[in-house]
Length: 551
Image 1: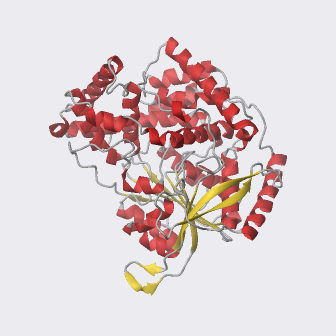
Image 2: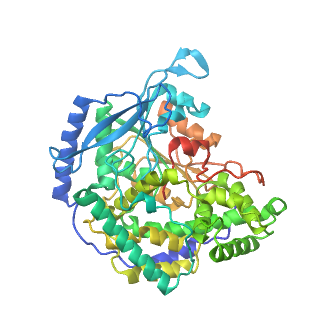
């Protein structure tokens, strides 16, 4: 499956038009980072001495947790430059290694330590990760490793961040113009300014300490609290970025590391340019999806060409702009539903069926997908606040609206599907009230690290493939496994036997391919016009692993 090539044109556009972001502030200068490194050592020694007192999980952490999954907390400094100052508490979950070979119950499996997982975001929680041990494909890994998840700083009950009243978080119906008017742009600028003020008002002086460098430091403290001399880590999406920071900052503390759906760690891509590249990649995935729908016109009756499918989508947007479905689903909700399909091919049948039904007079399937569950508003607002704080704090951003307007207007001419929606999500960073970090130059030399396994899907939009190539170049001795011509975001444990074989060989035996390896794509989804699941349907694996957020 291959859509018309957009990326070279988009890359050329980005290289020739994007303005350099201003360097506004100098947190993370060498002297400060040396103090933070010393503070991390102090905090890690303290955590090793204290350990983690695991007990029953609170419903807020892992609802209906089985008896084998236990939860606890670890204390970390708010500011690593002052480890004796204010501390915050991170929640942790663990399922101890079973020690049993799932293929031979009489055979004991030696324990290899703790496998710590982060699903990305920023803003996603890994607290559900230990539940993955019940999935057959993970039982060999669960036999050898304690499966450990945690909620990073700001997430869930780990010193939670908030930027607005969750009661007002789910707004609907909303618009989502691909080429917004000047009046609409002014509204969104005002909203971004208000959101940034809300983050400062609700979080106070703590706001500046929610960033990727501190996430990497927290990971080292967690390693020590678990009693591990070296870390075994599985990071997905954004988790690959601070995993790479960890490898750069603490190379001697690393045992094994899997970076699944790697983001581009180039400091110049963090995060303004990286989001523009992501928007260009989502245009390709949208084209892939329309091409698949067109091949299954007998099922969906949306047209035999991608252009005709696009026309049906546009008609739906126009109708929803005139009259929201169920009074709650407008163009913005429609766009969110189809954006989710850019993350996971398994969602294609339900989205295509919902669009087909809506255009034929039945809005119920679309409403079931698009109307958010009010019960998730607190978690969703929290995830959005952490996403914003981390990305805004991590690096300088353009502070002149004219730069954003110019770059996104140009990109939207060739990649309209996601460009402006992505811009609005990140625009609070233009007006951010906290000082910015300078991104660390992720780079390791030969022999500094054990081999790192990088997994990537060639047509991933949330973490475009160029990022995996750059990560591979920057981490000496790392090995890249590519799922060819595939685009689902999240490769590990995704049902591709070739990819999962490399994952198991690495985690269980430390084996990596001799050089860059590739795997054929997993099968395409089966077209079906059957019942449509409810909002947030992301499949068994994503539910277990807590996948959420932009990346």
